Image 1 (cartoon, rainbow, N blue to C red):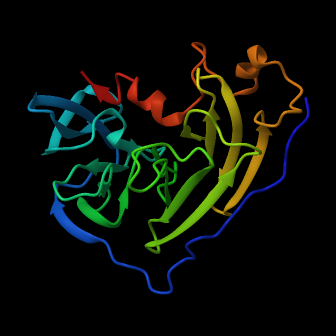
Image 2 (cartoon, rainbow, N blue to C red; image 1 turned 90 degrees about the vertical axis):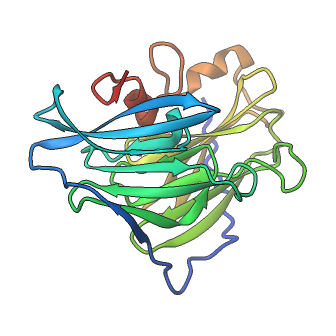
Length: 258
């Protein structure tokens, strides 16, 4: 299999010279030494989704205490955790937001603080497993309501410095359908798809170095792999979903309570 390694990186928004500050908006009793987070989503009606966060002791789901409930959050992909489950990030819908835009909050279990971060996020988005970076792709063309099929516009927000960087990943030809974002270990994966859902291209972004690398690109007319075999070129789980740490958390009954 031929690997396409040509890098398409366009720094459209350089890191800011002065970092915006996060705002503490709520407090709760911090996590103990043997505690970590779990959560539950509830739908009281009217399209509203409420998030309740819990402290779990010694990884025993029955030994828990409720920390707080936050209204009007963004559903299943609206909350993500670091790999130790002591820091959480969640999205909140807000009335005056631009289309698809969400407010981003950080929940620090060690300090018992909920902070509103100085960035607005659109889906799909992912938090790095160490909690240092938030990545998201703005897949919509402004004012059109349609996909940007020419390139994946990727934004990386540094939680520590409060600065953002924008990158653009271009395939050899426009994708027919959409872009998606996944988190796998220390990297973010970006995928493009054809109209019927067949994989079109795969790239990997390392947030610590900002290296964006094309792994393969089937939009090239000379791509050597048959379309029916391209699904096997993705890192897949047992049911042919792209491997994603965040999706695994959502299906874990010890993390998401029903």
